[in-house]
Length: 255
Image (cartoon, rainbow, N blue to C red; front, side, top):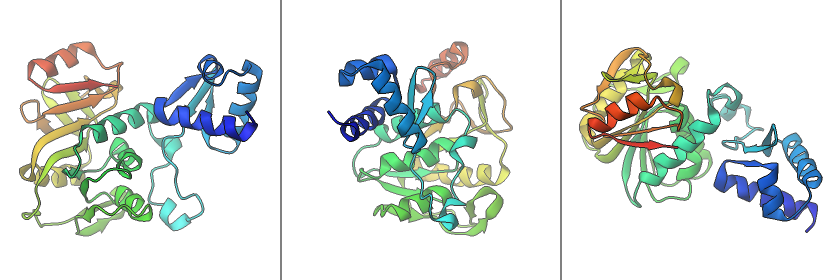
């Protein structure tokens, strides 16, 4: 197997597993540890994966690096807290959707990262989050409705007095800055107000939240536990809070 074939297989493995140790890739490719380490180094240098101690991680999303106008709208991957965990959360969120579902997606790191997983799905997406909308447009995603309004640059949101009365969907995927026994909290007031408008148009509310925000109060109460239907978070989430969520009949996915 030549180098380009190994590189292709390593990237394929990471697309399915998010991360890999050198040992796992040695077993997968039946090559020496030295060869695998050289391959990881070269792929890291070409920004096709992230080299980490004793292995590699998938780069969460490929951006349009040469289009500066578009790139300015995207979150900087290096600035996203827990980017690998958020990528797993995003993937699980899209897996919940059925073909031809209508879903609303609000602002956040994990919601932006849902974009790459939506590309191969027949799912109607409603969003006012400009980074996600721009990404889907540039990738020729055909099932997108951008919820219009005034563009608020510092939050990358389109804010509108319209309550989108004609739209209906299965899920609202939203982010938060904390979740406790009281519910999901959020610090961004405009995002908070927009998400509140969307509740009446969906069947279920899905919170996508980092594991280290479980048990944290992160601002104003957005949704109580009685309003939440599903929480997707990381495996390191506070087990006591997770138990409280399940006791409220909230479906919890630990990824």
